[in-house]
Image (tube, rainbow, N blue to C red; front, top):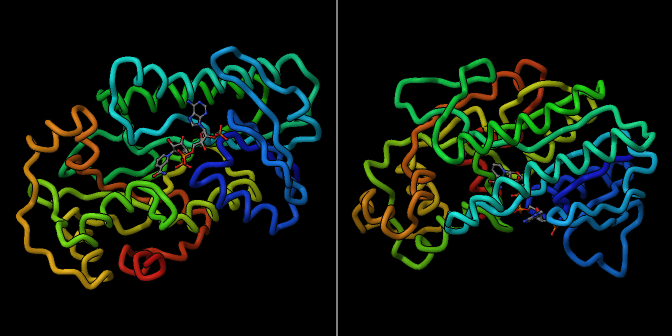
Length: 300
Ligand SMILES: NC(=O)c1ccc[n+]([C@@H]2O[C@H](COP(=O)([O-])OP(=O)(O)OC[C@H]3O[C@@H](n4cnc5c(N)ncnc54)[C@H](OP(=O)(O)O)[C@@H]3O)[C@@H](O)[C@H]2O)c1
């Protein structure tokens, strides 16, 4: 198959690209960055500019599936103008692709978009699966709804649409886990708040495998990309310290301190979300790393 990936140069995109190329698929990618001079076999780069709505139309040639991973990072202070960028990099990019598909003959059958677990409201009692009401009203919750609505446009063109609601991706190559690992490595690690808040996560290899599985099986609809065993913040902090053989002696950092440092973004550290990957398990996807302990052992 030929797969067009947006954001292929990012954390998930690189892992997925490696997997697809290994499986003899061809990967076209849309990028806002310079295209590397020494291309890999079956890997072709095309430019787009979301702000000016420009796109190299050749990117669509022979493509069967689009995987939309592009988006400005959420790990940057959410100022008013950056909030606009967070949203538009995810939704206007979809609009550009939609217009292209609408107006140019093509053979694309499936649009797969990254999505976030921020859509599930903060709750210490709810257990969320793909059928749960997902109507979080925070900035990020609303962003995920709009992002998903953009992706749904492709149904009008009779494409299959999949939204991959992804938890915190555990990788040793970037992302939120490394931010947690760094202070623990430096002997100044600690949990946040009560530490009882559950965090839904997934190993980088599992999330890439899940996208691969969705592509191969043409899986439609919403799918939670989270490991079957969420972990509390305190357990995770301890598990990282154990894996790195570091002591933990500092008290947990209170919520108000992190709010001062991070502003609105602090909710990412304190929200409790018990999310299960019901659909992935129902359709027979096998997690290579179902527990955080196994994931951390593999990564560090
Ligand atoms: N990693 C996680 O823990 C996690 C969790 C939940 C959801 N997700 C979502 O999954 C998707 C992929 O995640 P990731 O961790 O692989 O992201 P990432 O490493 O931040 O990469 C995203 C890619 O998007 C492109 N990009 C960055 N800023 C952009 C902008 N302003 N406009 C257009 N494109 C831009 C870049 O590609 P080019 O330079 O090639 O253009 C970048 O490589 C994202 O939408 C993310 O929100 C990730």
